[in-house]
Structures are given as C-alpha cells and as structure tokens.
Image 1: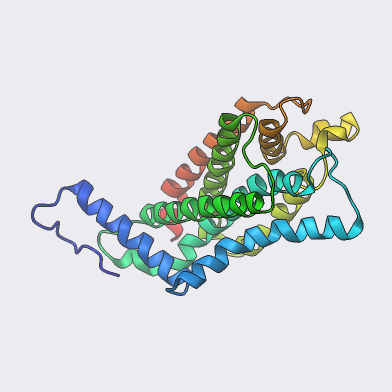
Image 2 (image 1 turned 135 degrees about the vertical axis):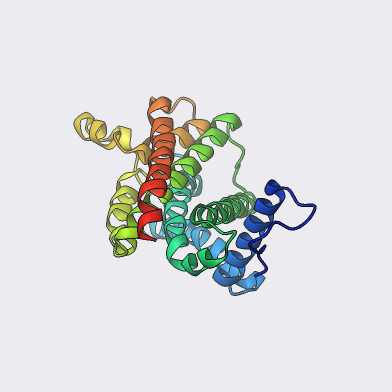
Length: 264
C-alpha cells in the first residue's frame, strides 16, 4: 500500500492528501480481507445472501408459512436484510482496529482514518449484498419493489447508521478489552433471535411486545415491513431509532477521542 509520507506533496491540499490516505486504506482493506481477488469479495457478499435462503429452506422443509401471508421469501428477506445489515456492519467495523493497527506507524494515518476506511468498505459491501438479494428475488418471480420505496430506503439507512454507530462503539471497547470481539457474539445472537426475522413481534402478547420494542432492531425490521405492507398495524418510533443511531455514533466518537487513542 502506498501512503503519503510525512511531508505534504507539492501541489496537494490537505484534503487531497486525506482523500489519498483514505483511498489507500480502502484498497488495502479490500485486498487483505478479500484475498486480493473478486472471488474473495463475492464469497463475503454472498454469505449473507445464503443466510436468507437457508432460513427460507428451513421454513419450507418444516412447512411453516409466512406469518403475514404471501411469500415466505419476502417475509424472511424483509427481516434479514435490515438485521444483517446492522449485524455485519457493527461487527466488521469493530475488527478494523485490531486488523490494521500497524498502519498507525505511517505519519499520515490516524486511528480514525482506519475506521472511516472500514466504514466505506462495509457500506459498499452491504449495498452490493442488497442488490444481489433483490436480483435473486426478482429472478424467482418475487415483487421486490415496495409499496412505499422511500420508507424502505429510510429503513435501510437507519440500519446502516445504527450499524456504523455500534461498530464505532465496539472499536472503543476492543481497544482496551480485545476479548469483546468474541463477547459481542452473545448480544448479537440475542438481538437477532428476538428482532422478528422469522416471527411477527406485534402478534405476541402485548407485555412481551412492549419489551421487544426497546430494541431498535425490532423497530427497524418493522419499519422495513411497513414499506411493503402499510396496513401492517404497527407503529415505529422513528425518533427513537434515529436517536439510537446518532447517539451511538456520537458516543463512539467520544470513545475514539478519549479511550482508543490512549490504549491503541
């Protein structure tokens, strides 16, 4: 990876130098994580796609219909896509510091630059995965265009924002507690199993449903399904979800400023 040296090259502004650093970090991240080939990138993109169809296959094998009626494929996809977007985003951003820590010895590279590069890679990877899922569903004869496309776009952005925020918070935690990279699996499994990927939360007893709605992932899944069925009969607290997303980003940046720089 070619990175700018300690001195600023002639004719380049500070913004140009920063853009050059981020570009170099993004390219290095992709080459090291994906094995330097398109096949490596394809495997990481297709794994979440396989996840969706494995769940649908299990439902079909057990003869479980969609709880909302209609296509089981679309029911699972509208739950898995936002949930996995958040999950993969928050987990992979967390790994950025441990995987690229030696890069901070370059004079122009800061810890935050490594995180920014990983965020950009994950955004592109997540969007590619979304396009692949929509293409496969379309090829199978499913109608992937939501009744309210803008609502679906907002829901996807909310899942991305929350994943970025929690990922940056995780960077702060692993900077002084590296074992968290494994410990994070437990809350992720709990959130995934309770977010409504294979069941409909609002059909549960009201007391249990009110507890589940404290999870922003549950509300993002409902947000996504509202885009396909505006008469679903649920109410999403959009402000609550956005506060989780922006609040986690802000808290993660505070950790980066006062914790990560101290322990990294």
